[in-house]
Length: 232
Ligand SMILES: *Cc1c(COP(=O)(O)O)cnc(C)c1O
Image (cartoon, rainbow, N blue to C red; front, top):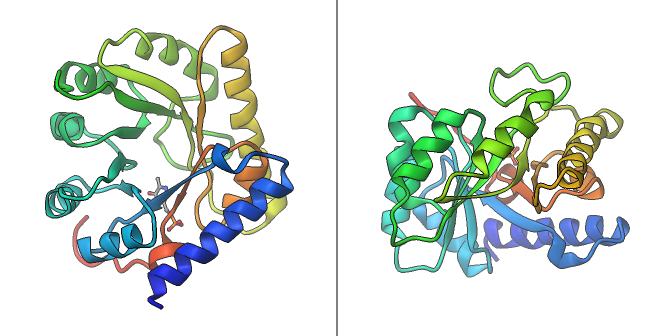
């Protein structure tokens, strides 16, 4: 058995265990395999282990893999930071975008989404409590951004995404996930129709699932440690 196959099986077991422990149906949690920095051959191996949804951060690297694997029925999620000059290629080649935190980026994605494709699925990135990163909209501003993004014709606003500051302490992992769940609940109570919470990575996906994650983005636990060589 290859490492990727056995890792996939272990991660799936852990996802199932966390969902079951939380009393959630198994089909409520989707596993996104984050393949950034790994070659197309690794994606193919994960596909052979039954995985179809893949997350990528770096546009050129992703486009190369999407092209190399175009005969496979894969779903591609862009999860990295988005610069304005990258929106066209993202709109043309991806099924989901998780890191939207500005109206201008959403407007460009909508305008550039080809008519031949279904609307692009969007998650708004929220800068949850204690996060050092500069990306993500502030929690108190996300409802306003959501109402503007929801009006764009070629986008389907699906929900919220977060990358909390990493910690291995489950007690401290939980707070931002609770904050995200409550944020989405509040927005839905105000009339939004969000069905996606994209949160949880290799070190904290079990806690994220307990708190309502519907997509967990798992890289290292599937593909192994990343080697960042050169420029990203
Ligand atoms: C790299 C990355 C992941 C996967 O992280 P792991 O710790 O390797 O599981 C998930 N989400 C985002 C946004 C990432 O950039």
